Image (cartoon, rainbow, N blue to C red):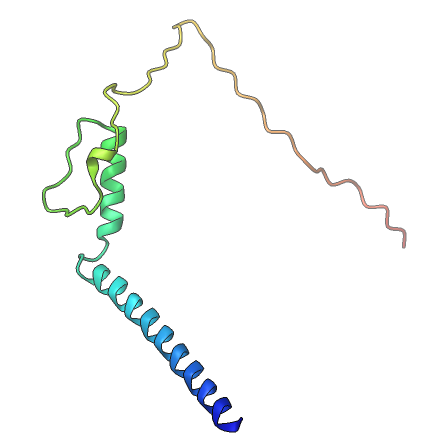
Length: 109
């Protein structure tokens, strides 16, 4: 009985070590993929994608190596929304109201 128990404990220990090793190898592979890109490449790609989205005439720089497939994104062909007001319109601003006004103190000495 003791030999069987020791064998099961040893098998469980080996199994846990193998799982831990596999997790570490996955993490190493994930991190090594990030190391291949230059610093801030993700941020640069995001900014350039936003520039292309909001300004269709903008072209991405050739030095950026994007891992995202750009054909999956749709770009607008319009130049944006233009709002025009008639010339005789007067713009009124609403004054900010005070949320809390302090009052006189009612302390009696």
